[in-house]
Image (cartoon, rainbow over all chains, first blue to last red; front, side, top):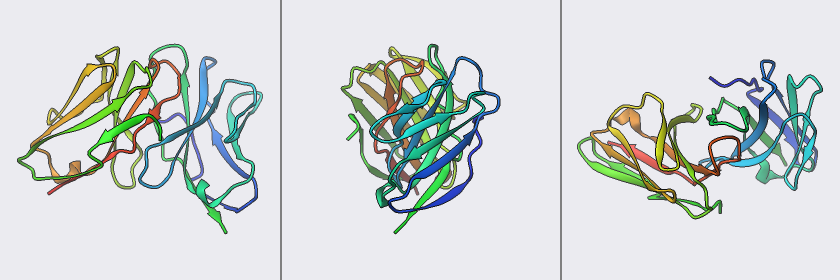
Length: 111
Length: 113
């Protein structure tokens, strides 16, 4: 079972920052937070991951709370092409561990 | 383009047919995965191969038979499928199964008639 909880859907205006929350209250000390997204009928795409420090790459920023029980994925300037289902996943980084997908958040970018 | 290629992209097969799905990656990855995505359901992990050995089999019916002849290729052999097996089948690869990000193919849309 997925160890994360996400809202089923969200809307965001084009050009604005999209902030996608994720709760992972049972996260273990050795588990990372990963984000993937799936654009309609395509394979999931890796976005970003982190352990406890905030992370940023060319696609997004990941903010993890100090207690690590929740995180937020930030798309700084959302475009219509960011419309997708976004998945938040927790998994261990240094041993065999499955990538288990939950239901994710369906993000609609509004023109 | 993720570097993971799946063929065919679409497949229609009868319940008595035998077909195979193919996945290929040249990313230097040594772990490969099969996922199933049915309509309006989360992705379900089916099989995991690490260094060409199957390390995970999530109670998948025997009508699905995976094969990993080398670290670059993964097959899913299908026989006597049911209409409820119609779904998007996704292949992924990663460097090891322990935490590196996975790269997914575009999937094969399978319809069983």
